[in-house]
Length: 352
Image (cartoon, rainbow, N blue to C red; front, side):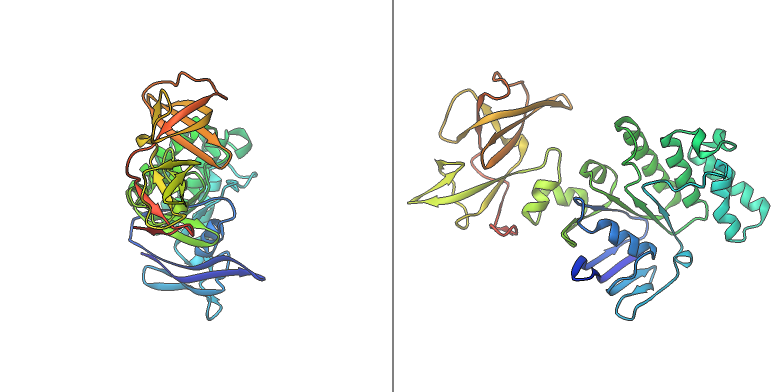
């Protein structure tokens, strides 16, 4: 349904997006995940037709809609796509019904069909009781539902979301995630969703593209990214909590981890060992495979305890069954398993 072929976007001398190639099946829920400034919103704007690629092609359902090599693009209104902005962008002088109905009027839909479709999507989003209110008379969460209803009313084949939940409180974000997934199933539209929140990504997506510095670091299912990260960045960005990377360096005839000699055998000097949080242990005393670190944070998650400990050049997070005896600021001993989950080169790619 959706294909990107070496898509690049330059602003002056800066490549905001660099040679992104993806192929997304019909009906997929693709999340573009990455930190601020990685290029995910720029990529979404190119999909929407609001930005022209500097190079490469964007294809919807077998038809090229943007060609950066030829500086040609299909008008955004003719792409069979809908975009939900982060800021909602509702017309303040129109009622909820008027906001949702407007794109159908523009499309020339007959009044009886238009009214039936507006009533249908208002019910679908649970806002049919707000039809006569104006945007300033409803809450932020309700405004977001109106923006989504307006977008899906014309039945677009591709739905585009630019961090639509970032302005909502934590509880409402969780509720809206569920609503968006239900909406995705109900419409069957191919969906592209931008976020920096990896919990949103792993909860909602059928496919995830992890972006960094304008490039896609890894593309796959949420399970692929968690179980087999291809780069050190993905390993430490995805997961709750994300993985722990520990540099291992040669010192004489042995190997040093966090300043201590340990019986590890990395595939190369300077390699980084990945340890998953659930495999780390809180030990009562120093041992042959422990690191003395300062206790920094303690929190509960799903009935278990998440413990974070730090050193000047190291930060480890462990998931344990019980609270540590130490207090924040005191020393704890984190035990490492015999075998890391993966090895990464100093440059970040997976090795071994």
